[in-house]
Every structure is written in C-alpha cells, then in structure tokens.
Length: 343
Image (cartoon, rainbow, N blue to C red; front, top):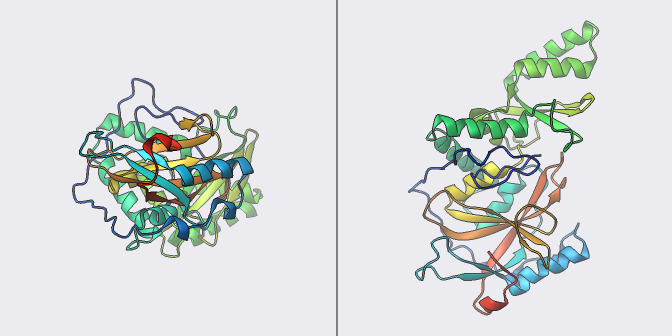
C-alpha cells in the first residue's frame, strides 16, 4: 500500500503526489478537541519487554531496547522556555490484533484513551477529515483526491517498476450484495469466467475509492456487521486481473493510512511518531537504524506526543503495515545529553 504524508514537505513512499509547487494542505483546527492525560499511569515495569515481542531480529530488539532504556527527547513545536523539553522512555504496549483495525487500537492504547474504543477513534478520525476536507480550497481538494486515487484506485498502466501487485478498492453496499451476486451469475451463465464477471460487475456498480468522500466511507469500515459497506479488493499484476476478494463475510476493515494518522494528530492535538526498526524515508538515527515518521497536528495547539511501533509491511494482512502501541513514560532520571534520539 502506498504511504501518504499529507504535508507539502512530505514525500509519499513509492511515488510523489505533490510537486514542489503544489499547494500545502492545511487542516482546520478544532478548538473543542481536548486531551486528558490523567489516565496515562502505566509504568515501564508493567509493559512487556522487547524480548517478548515476536517477529523481530536481534539487531532490531537492541535498537528498540535502547529507546526504552535511554529514551527520546521531545521538544514542543513552539520550542520556547514555557514548554520544557521532555524525555520519554518508550516501551512496547502489547500485541494488537491484525484485524485491519490495528492503527486505531494501537492509538487508543498509546493515548490511554480508555473512554473510547477503536471504532470510535475511527469515527472521530473520519469526522475530522470530512470537516477539514470541506474547508479547503478547490485546488487543495484536488491534491487530496489525487493522493487518494493513487493509493486506492491506481492507474494500472503505470507503477509496475515499483509494484508486483496493485490493488483497487471498491465499496459494495451490504444491501446490494444480493443484486450484485445475481448480476454476476447472469454473466457466468453467458459463458464468462467467474472472476472476470465479478470484476466487471463490481467495477460497474460499486463505489471506487478515489476521492475524499469515498475515502471517508472506506475508512469508516471496521469489519463489523454494523458497517454500511463491504470492501471489495481487485488485485492486478502487469499481465491483468490476479484475484477478486469479495469479502463475503464482511470482516475486512479499512487499514489506517497516513491520511488517517494526520487526522488523528489534528483531532487530538498530539504529535504522533511512528517508530520503525527497518528502512524508511524518515528521521533516522544512522548509528542505530531506528526510524521516526513524524505526523504533526495542523494546529498551533499541541499536547504531548504519542508513539506507535510499525512492525512491518504484511503483518496486518494484504500487505498492509501493522501498528502496535508504544507506552511513552516521561522520565526525569535520564540526562537530556544521553538520550537515544532527539526528535
């Protein structure tokens, strides 16, 4: 899946959707959004050690253990004396189910937002996007639409130098599944191969995820029976259609992308850092190969950050990135000169 950092200065992994002259996209501030940190009482000792986390190489464990032992230095965006720098020790916050909701589940744990579940976080994220998308200029809106189209409805004539498989995401209303099945069956009876018939009907009758409104409908899908739509995924190779995932049980969820992370950051007025222990275009500790992908709220008001750990592509199914929570514990015992990393 393509990675989008919705910022005029950020690069999109695998491709660039904005040229240097493209307008910046400014998300509108919500003065009513508040963050209560009083529940952030988890201690490092209560968290699993990095030795308990599966799927990591020894070198990765060492780098991540260093973040837990030495901490990272965070400076408030205003960077003045009224906002002192804080050293955070980062520990693993526990496993998160690879059900497509991992970004929101991990964020809920990392923020210790006990009054919300992952589905409510989804809803607030999408609401933030819809409000802000409606407030930007037409030119800015086209930039966002283009980025969404690139990720979820890619031009299948291009991109094969980067991708082996490309996916097209479609939305099928749950109430329409019966009529969709009947239409597919009619084509099969006429002699069309089943997958080709399904591709034809789904592309004709379902909603393509290719702009802001369709992204909002897509990102609301959590794999719950209460979802309004089901996700249909068409997979292609350079030679043509590879497979059709019809998601008949309706369990597929929309994987959180970088647009969602930016909206989460703005909604909760928090800087969000995604920590990786493998390659990426990001803030990097060259010596220890630890990568930080910063996502900043589009508001002058900013509370303490929270941190997520990206285990790697493919852990969350269908090649998507899998996120797990990091517990950020403020520490007065670590010297600012001896931290593992300065954000």
